[in-house]
Amino acid sequence: MPCAILYFITTFVVCFCSFGYFFISYIQFQDYEILVKQTKLLYDSNMNAESPFSLNFAGLQKDTQLYEKFCTKFHRFEDIIVNFLEKPIPESFLKKNIVYLTPDATQALQSLETNTVYVLGGLVDYQARKNITLMQAKKLNCEARRLPIPEYMKRKTDKKYSYSKVLTINQVFAILLKYHETKDWEIALPIGVPKRRGFAPQSEP
Image (cartoon, rainbow, N blue to C red):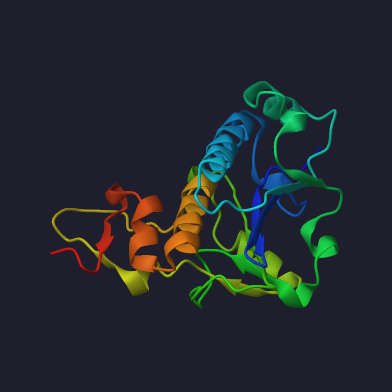
């Protein structure tokens, strides 16, 4: 059974999308379709981007239910413009170059650096369990960073909000694509952070 989590990686300003093995117990079969749908949105946004990343899937094995789901949602899935990695992320890249992206990290992501591999754990957002990705980063002795939402967005107070910073994989991907294009977090973050979460750009009255 493959792991049901999506990683996002960017290295040398090249983005890879891959499945690892640590999170296998944190998503249920009925949520495969949600994960695949979010991945499809991610893939489509990348194909339509002015500065697209190079995408890779790792650990997505054939003859599995998750792979079958991908085949039903993607037209000619095996022919899509991605590279299918054979090994999980910790075995595919040098650990010293890996940075895990998680809302539980204490340090904010300042920019997308070259020669660095950024990993996003993509549990289905409504089931996201606190510290899962952060624990994996610590287990591997890798750095962990979060999106700089508090640094570049303010909390609205006109009504009650959740102020949750847990986003879907396609929302995070959209933010990183926009940042890659503009190098401006104030422009990039509102692309993926839903207004209903209670955050607004610092420049907004």
